[in-house]
Structures are given as C-alpha cells and as structure tokens.
Length: 85
Image (cartoon, rainbow, N blue to C red; front, side, top):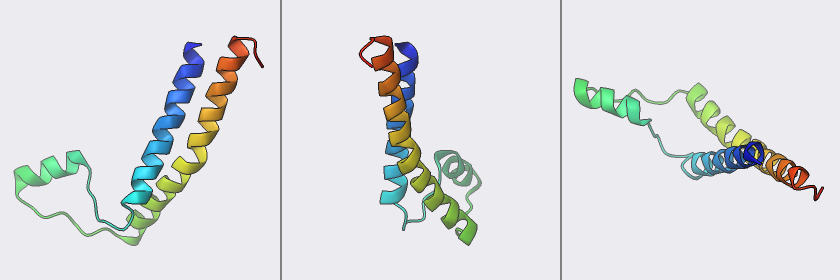
C-alpha cells in the first residue's frame, strides 16, 4: 500500500510540476538558489538561452506525460494490493 501511495504521490507531483512549467513557460524565471546567490553578490541574472527555453518546455511536456502514467501505476498497485484488480 505504501509503495502505491508513493508512486501516486510522485505522479501528482510530476503533473503539478508540468502544469507550473507550462503555465509560466513564457516568463523568465530563476530558481530559489540562483536568486539567493544573485542577491548576495548583487549581480543580475543572465538571459535564458535557447537551450534553457527548450529544456523548460521539455520538462513541462515530460511532466504531462509521466504524471498521469505514475498516477495510473500507483492506482494499479493500490488496487492490486487490495485485491480489487
């Protein structure tokens, strides 16, 4: 049961990450660690390259593909352990 819940939670997390990346795909965002480093040094963030934009979109697409897959896998494991499948 625990394994199924962990797989299900990972699927929900991947779907949420995919949604957030897709929602903010047109904005230049930086992560928290980079923001903290830039704040202490007083520097400006570098502009995003085409590779950065590609990887951001790829991460959103993979979240949309792998999220539902892991959700279904988690449900299958849970139902299998409850002997309903």
